[in-house]
Length: 128
Image (cartoon, rainbow, N blue to C red; front, side):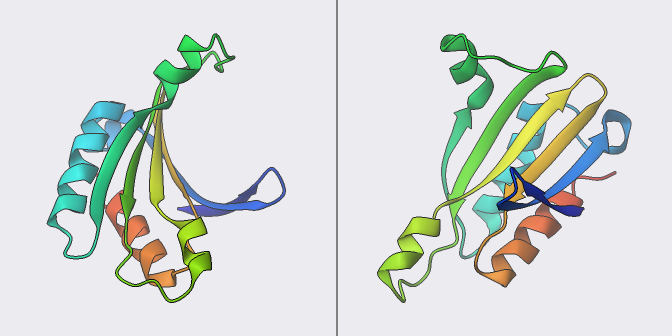
């Protein structure tokens, strides 16, 4: 898993799996596995799945040619509200994009280090 900065300000974690090295090789397959992990976690609450690909297509927005599908699974780790500012950084999301020969899985760095570790471990567990 790599840490990188997107657009010079967004810290993200990202891993690119070849389709033959991951337990499911479609966005929906990966979403189903991640949802099971979220539902089994004692703190995380599943919120929704967002179809970014369908939304962009509906708006006739540009989609890079090699992207075949793209969705987000949205959830929240929130078990406390220590300050109003914490609401601005919730909920969390993991993005999954299917390319011709690979699956890209990424998320925006959370202010809670333990949340980053949990998301990273969930994603790394997708490897065969």
